[in-house]
Image (tube, one colour):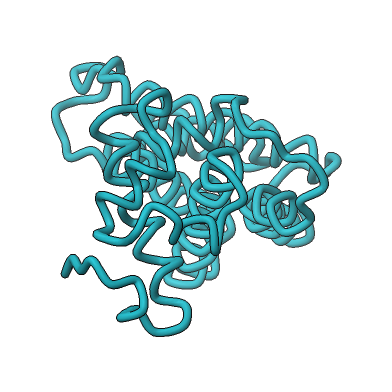
Length: 213
């Protein structure tokens, strides 16, 4: 990132993104407790007052970081589903891979998203973003139920099973607690696929995932 001491050098919209990038870097390096608008301004190379043009306080900045994380997660799940085959099971597997990848690539933001420290208040945009990833997953489940691939149960119930399993994998991976030896020594994506297929076996009508690990 090119640093400058002149906040006026940013074009409209650029300062907002520059501040978020600086905040994410500091979050990863120092954690939430050490993050401040003053520190973010210094990291971004702007005046101490500049962040207040976009964020009322530290809580608003953290909420924006988490919202961006949810938006990226939803996009990743949707792209994974589109790029997979038309088989809902395969779409669900690749959605799981996308979920874990996001967590591994941005562990600090992932912790912020799911750590319970965000004050949602009346932020409609944040609530919509935080629900979007689950809705992307729900869409895959609904397709599978409609096609007779997944069990004829409430799609929300089945999506919750898949969601919690994916989230568990992601958290274990970022904490370094998911042992590769449990399913062989393949790459992370392949390991996630193996585990995801076990999840699918639990919600599938077709007994084709018994020997997955």
